[in-house]
Image (cartoon, rainbow, N blue to C red):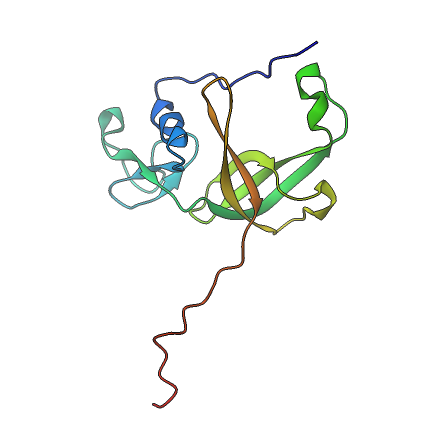
Length: 151
């Protein structure tokens, strides 16, 4: 018997975030005055805010961060997730500052650790949603082409 996984309940404040995920873009709520980044939608904590969130906007983020906290689930409470166990649920500390809840994919659950560098990956569902998940980050390549060995 097939079970359907629950999908996010999208409100109007977060619709732009979910629409961008379908395009494989990761957005954060951003202050236009000081560039502070937030998740979820929030007023900026750094100064007085304009009415109706006028000083805030959705802006593309790096999608990179590190594991802040995590747990490994070996038991499910919804049969729709039977095929997923074991799975990792984590809080990702994004490079831009906010904590973002998601799953860690692309490695064995036992390989996940606090401080592990991760990057966003996008899971397109058959229901038309795109879910942001995180995988171990690929090593960043250094561009040494502009280094002059002779000062």
